[in-house]
Image (cartoon, rainbow, N blue to C red; front, side, top):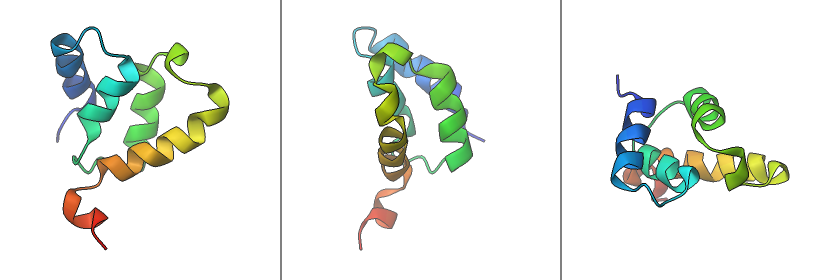
Length: 75
């Protein structure tokens, strides 16, 4: 199984000047992680200063769309 945490850490090392949210989005793009994994690791890995709390639900919905492989998004 792919480790979302490991992917995020590797991307964060390569892009230290980007926000943790942007690096998290890069880590999940096209990887087909479960919705539960995305929500769990989002809370653990993304700095709370990178987003407004009231927008969290919309952000996670967007991340779930990024997470799906490209073939699943074409319809």
